[in-house]
Image (cartoon, rainbow, N blue to C red; front, side, top):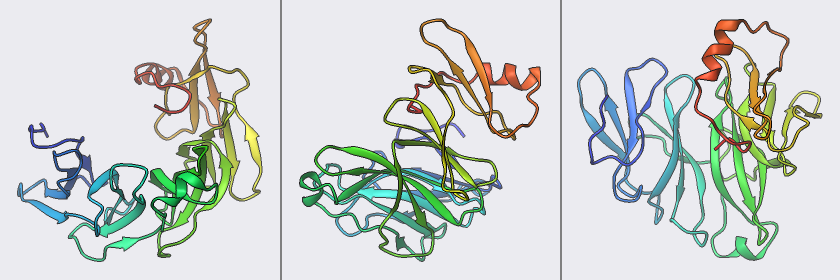
Length: 247
């Protein structure tokens, strides 16, 4: 779909391709829309959540039945919470309960920066920012509990889930890529050189492609033991360069 000037963020396609979600144009403050691809009907499903009308990080659940997004007020003095809603606009749920004003002055208060569904859609991996030091951490949320306190796992910024949903990959405060195993609760260091650049994942294979910015040497890090053939390696080389924090 070619986007018009009225939209401010890329359209997000549902897993079955039947729906597209997008945000309005005015600084992410014109609401959340869902478009039926076949009919072209474009419907506003959420205009605001109370006083919060700055939305971001929109994504479909793996089954395509719900949308998740962050709702904030545009500055650190507003709460920013993870919300989910059915694609028809019903059953709006607030999964977190961050606190405005206070979080800048306390290491116990938090704001949300990003969120992504687990492969089975039962959990959400979130990036949270704590306190006056703006410390980022990865945390888990349930998709069913309302106004919950995030389960903080480790300091750092999230990258992605493992293919089977049993592990999380993230960039630690040391600038290196780590794995957090949700079964064993163990943390494993994946990369050992600072300054490496994450390029992306190969479809269907848990692998990270990194490039040393000083030497230019590309390394393929196989995360689950699956074979990575030359075709997949060539595919990965075409993925746009991202830094070690996933940006």
